[in-house]
Image (cartoon, rainbow, N blue to C red; front, top):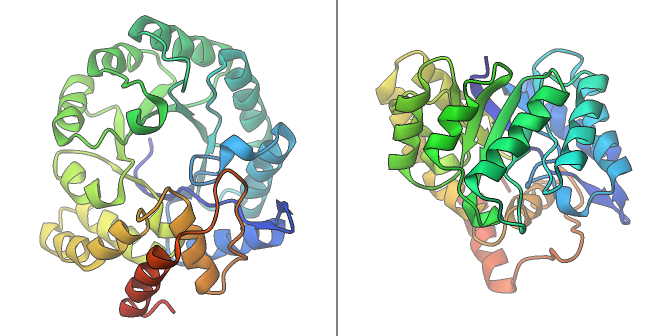
Length: 290
């Protein structure tokens, strides 16, 4: 159902408010470069500091700006099941193609609690659901046995895998089978994951180089391994640079240096250190982006 390179789009701010015009420009930039879809209001979109009204507005702008050209997988996760249901209902109402549901953070549910959480949302809202497994942010890993169990629920169609473990990714593909889409949650893991049968990536780096990652994924989907491998190594250093500090600090700063947005953050996120900023600039210059 979901294959390709999807941009986990940043939420631009200007003078403390969501920069709606800036968001639309970023969307057009990605579409023009051949991106497969967008994921608004994820980690990269600074969802923890968006109000509910801002969150819903960003999703609505993304859906309306794209007007069906490519797919929208709206971030709708929460550590409150009821809140996640409400965000998911809104995403369906405004026309999103699916939702991305991060595993509940901070309250550290058991595997049974995780299962009931995602099952409750899937039963409450008839929309395709992509799970999001990122233990480094949430403190809880969705174990492969739990993902396998969840994959049997008809509208739970895939997982964004950001565990960092290629063994875990391989096992979830084996357990869930070809009808369940496994997408990389780490840019640098896209090539190896797709070699195992993954269907693409929900990407940070496509905010700044949508054409390159889109090409890598298309080559892999077409079985053109050598061409994809070449792009993997070509962009590898840039993929690492956008995680030199906590995401999305480096990628928003990169977009600012490229003149795409105002590089504004909301506390507790802030601008990168001077040393890391110089490292980021050096990599961007090397790639001809600034």
